[in-house]
Amino acid sequence: MRRRPKKQVNTNHERWLVSYADFITLLLAFFVVLYSSTQMDSRKIAQVSAAIHGAFQELGVFAGSPDQEHQGGLPSGGIPGLKPGGGVTAVDVNRLRRELENALGEEIAKHEIQMRSTPEGLVVSLSEVGFFNSGEATLIEDGKSTLARIAHVLNEKGFQIRVEGHTDNVPIHNPHFKSNWELSTARATEVVSLLVEQYGFDPQQISAAGFSEYHPVASNGTDDGRKANRRVDLIVVSHNYHPGSDADNGAVAR
Image 1: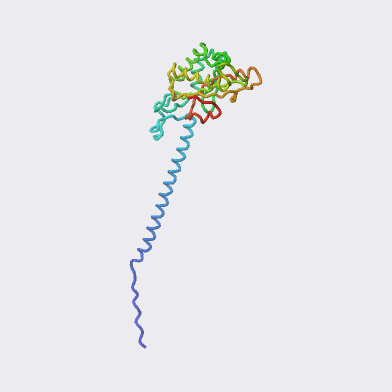
Image 2 (image 1 turned 90 degrees about the horizontal axis):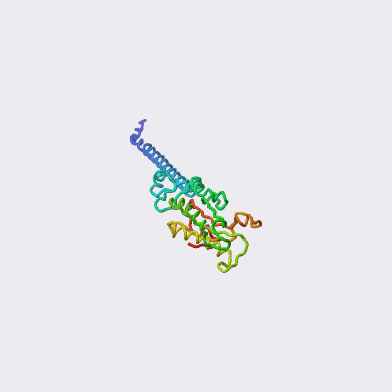
């Protein structure tokens, strides 16, 4: 019997290209995933860095110009109190407080001036005693002398200042003022006018607000408490402040 000839099978010597192509495709996908992960991490790091930097700026730690912030550096010399690029100056509260205590030791000893630190900045409280006659908004001569020393310390640093007038809860009605609102606002405006006109403060860096009896620092149930509430506060703002945002309950003059 005659055998059938075997069919000749053609061998494909290029099948390795299929495996090679699969390997290259997988390798490309691997590097694409690595690259994508790297880019995502960079964006996250940048976002975290920006958030931390913004938080420190709000606290008054950094006060550099936009170029300095972009470069991640502090202002030249790192000295707070120098006004960079027309912006709000960072406040070194402890250092500023020491300077004011040296300039106002006598008034502080007589309790005519008190100072306290708040999240917003340093508050310098001018008591009615030593600065104003009862029911009046004109600064007395001794008060002007004291204000001049305060102005010398504050103005040379270019700080942003908000001046707030406060009263006790005893109603007032005299030929000059019909209410404590008017009295508190007039006293704050009087101080602002003197700071701008006589001591050269930048009008764009200072504002006035009247709060009447509604922001007391002590109880109005005692004579000492009412005495403490009759005051004008100079607030050295340690971060960007937009007039009206923190004085919604006050009569604001600018």
